[in-house]
Length: 156
Image 1 (cartoon, rainbow, N blue to C red):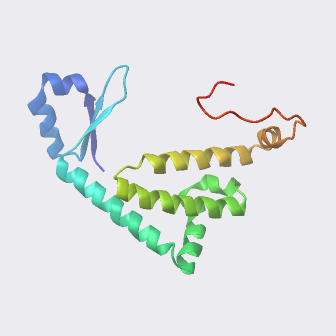
Image 2 (image 1 turned 90 degrees about the horizontal axis):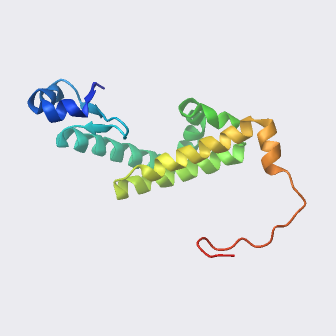
Image 3 (image 1 turned 135 degrees about the horizontal axis):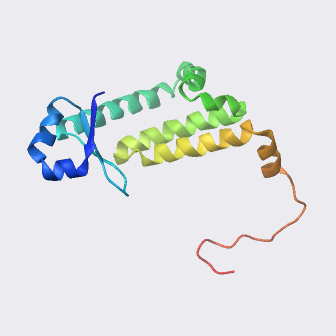
């Protein structure tokens, strides 16, 4: 995938020249000082990306409806997400089920934010399992009960 990088100021100061670069690149990454970069693409390319994501997600979701598909997904997860090797087997299955659900919802919502969040959460869980000292510290019973947890936003 061809991505051109330039500064946002180039787009503002030389718009015709900067936008002409889109003819040779799928995207232009606009770097901004002190803020998150932006990505510029054509509407047709954005629609294509959305269609591909939707088709892939729907196919993946349907594949998971069969026993063969579930087995295949569990077989390929370690190659796709190497960190799943540190998860217990029941967590790998739970991750695959949650991933399928999140991908299906992403298509309906036209937003991948929940999928990205899910991947980050499970990766952090794998990091805990990969570090025996951290795992022991987080799973140790302190023997103390700190009482009920208040509802979020409610003062104790």
